[in-house]
Length: 498
Ligand SMILES: Cc1cc2nc3c(=O)[nH]c(=O)nc-3n(C[C@H](O)[C@H](O)[C@H](O)COP(=O)(O)OP(=O)(O)OC[C@H]3O[C@@H](n4cnc5c(N)ncnc54)[C@H](O)[C@@H]3O)c2cc1C
Ligand SMILES: *[C@@H]1O[C@H](CO)[C@@H](O)[C@H](O)[C@H]1NC(C)=O
Ligand SMILES: *[C@@H]1O[C@H](CO)[C@@H](O)[C@H](O)[C@H]1NC(C)=O
Ligand SMILES: *[C@@H]1O[C@H](CO)[C@@H](O)[C@H](O)[C@H]1NC(C)=O
Ligand SMILES: *[C@@H]1O[C@H](CO)[C@@H](O)[C@H](O)[C@H]1NC(C)=O
Image (cartoon, rainbow, N blue to C red; front, side, top):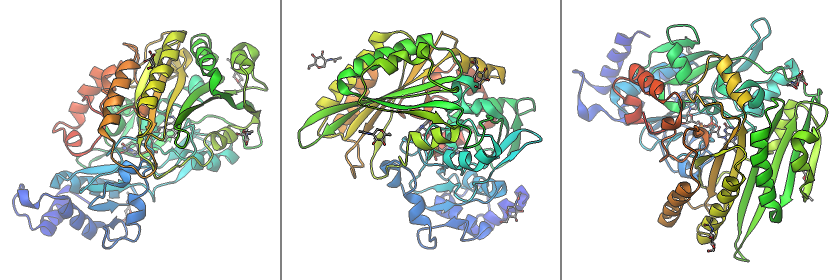
């Protein structure tokens, strides 16, 4: 549909004659005109839409289930997204985009009194062996993509949890495959993008949208809506090809410091792209006993026949309460790591920090700060967690070899990103002021290392993650070019700093 025709239709629907009639500018008017343009199946409202309530409940974070939009647009193709953005832009409505729903940040995938675009019906994933690329629509989740493609011997460089969606890529995306292939976003070949005014462009590393292409590698939801990802694949082999070895080791809380020291050393010493780990510790508030239990897990994998002792010896020698290690396919790893971990019903809070490889003291300090935080707020929390993921130089070099990303991390000989997570008791939506304040203090205690980029997929909404990117100035310049009226920042929640 041409722009003049669309605007004509909108004007008709809204009863607007001139360009700017303030009282007509509301999400309701955007929803009404979209419903007449796209129909009541694609554009659903609480009154008319059978899927409306289910969709509102889709985000994992309870805090986002509380934000009820004026309508939900369920596009079937790029044109529908373009039509939606044109109406949103024209009526100056608030909006949000929902893919897999795993963002913890309030308002990043849900909107109160605005237009929600949900990719439920754009879930296709395919592999073209001639071009050797995977094409994905944004509604697919990583477990589905991996299972669909495993018979063809390929996999996308996607999430470590099967239920996470494609929004992962826009934040960079840390995969089990990242040490060898880079961030998930480093594997982009071509992107279809609906810009904020509804225009559609195809961005590649070499065309006139190459700046947009790079900005979408870490720029999160600020640079447009991606409706098609064409990605370079990982040649994973099939489900029956058990070419990996590894799994999960669980340690008793009494060994938590040893595990963290081992993680600090691993972060500095290991730059073998076939090795991949993450380490999580949880402080669980055991309400009846009013005490805190600590559980530590190392997820360790090697692309090879066994776990080389030189790389994993520390983790293997610390006394464990449970070891589940075996030969695995890549699809097994993705399916097993977070089995059915889709815990709706709780409000989650994230935060991000970094640790220099080898700095054992800084790893252990983070634990103690978090333990004290959890202890002092245990009446208001269900559990807290710290997750450490090493970012080896091999990962950064792999990204640079594909043209680089907006994160533009420096080569330091290995650092770790940290996720600092709190979960409120089931059903509690509002963050008590004591928790909000305690968390601010905690984030100031578990200080990030200056010069190392924070990871936006795991941040607190108040953290200026973009400012920690090597590509911050590039990102600001590119944002200004593609959204000169700052419509996105004014009308949808997302990362600060642009
Ligand atoms: C259990 C769990 C495990 C996780 N594991 C990992 C991990 O291993 N590695 C990692 O990097 N992250 C991980 N994350 C974080 C996760 O990648 C991010 O929360 C990511 O943003 C989720 O994407 P989504 O599509 O599921 O979520 P959504 O909340 O639907 O989307 C995330 C953000 O991206 C925007 N967005 C989504 N699709 C588009 C699009 N097509 N165009 C424009 N904007 C869009 C949304 O508006 C939202 O702001 C994990 C999270 C959880 C809860
Ligand atoms: C999108 O789908 C509509 C049908 O709902 C169709 O008319 C239109 O041509 C499609 N657009 C594209 C680009 O495929
Ligand atoms: C990584 O593993 C692959 C497959 O097992 C192997 O071909 C490659 O040589 C390994 N790379 C390194 C650096 O060991
Ligand atoms: C050990 O871990 C495996 C795999 O995660 C699990 O199935 C099993 O129940 C665990 N055993 C114990 C004793 O916790
Ligand atoms: C944690 O609390 C204990 C007891 O209140 C205190 O002695 C210790 O210094 C605190 N540790 C940190 C890292 O804040």
